[in-house]
Image (cartoon, rainbow, N blue to C red; front, side, top):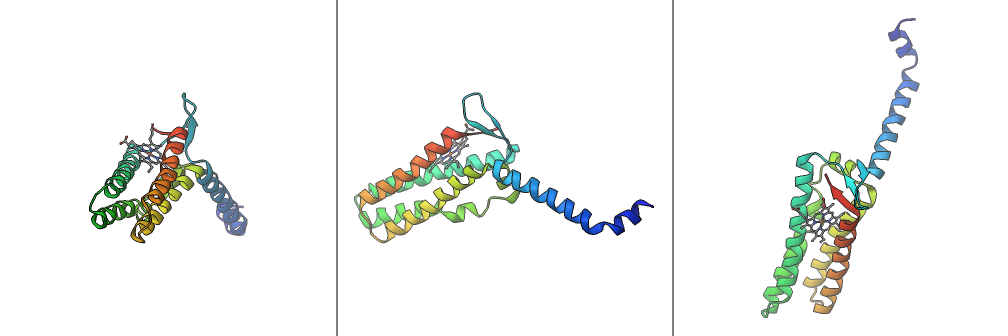
Length: 160
Ligand code: HEC
């Protein structure tokens, strides 16, 4: 029997097997990402240089958002300050996450993706509550919950 006959007779099972293997590999990657343990008890996430630069640029934007919220909330002109704080928070909301490409997402371990997404969601909520005229105390509490996540993720992961 020629290869093509074998293939044509068994195309269903072969396709299923390939599909299962691909789904398995993709699923495994989705959960684990491309990682190895680091020397300082963090997990190293291995990325292409451009991907690492992309994430680090997002990180600097996150820091800028935190800075914008704190600066806005400290303004004496409250309406102006709150508007600035809300737009700073919004800049780090879910719309920041939509640019992330699928290949890069696969390389990140699941807990890292979850933490990252929850930070974007928190920033959107923070923007909403600032616009709704919440207290400075509430803004600080929400910001503290967000920075807890920054700290947690930085203690867990390193990019290479
Ligand atoms: C989901 C994980 C995660 C979250 C959440 C996270 N970071 Fe990061 N951040 C990282 C990783 C990983 C690095 C690279 C650390 C390394 O390689 O040593 C990093 C690096 C940075 C850097 C350095 C950027 C550079 O150019 O080198 C800054 C600044 C930063 N983060 C700010 C923040 C701030 C502010 C927050 C919270 C609002 C935050 N990050 C939340 C994972 C995260």
